[in-house]
Image: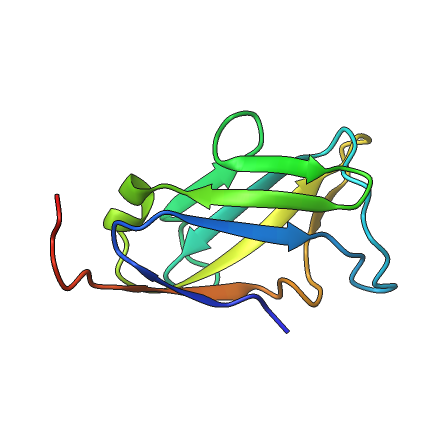
Length: 120
């Protein structure tokens, strides 16, 4: 089942995800891997936002355990409204690219809701 969430525009959200092999459900070791997470209004559409390892919003917190976090800042979410699909792609240490599809992601959907009160 994909990870789904609702976020208010302008809020910060941190998603914690465990990478698992889509065929065996085994944890994917993320040592030496790079990860990107793309958000788009429709499947197959152009990414409205991309986060990645290397200082752009994706942090591996337990490489051997396959755990990483995706941080969407207040400025990231302020510009988004409505439902966005998101997908994780992992490039392993051997440059093999795979999309993450498992109990955490398949791809997921985040619903960005309008902020009722603008506190800025």
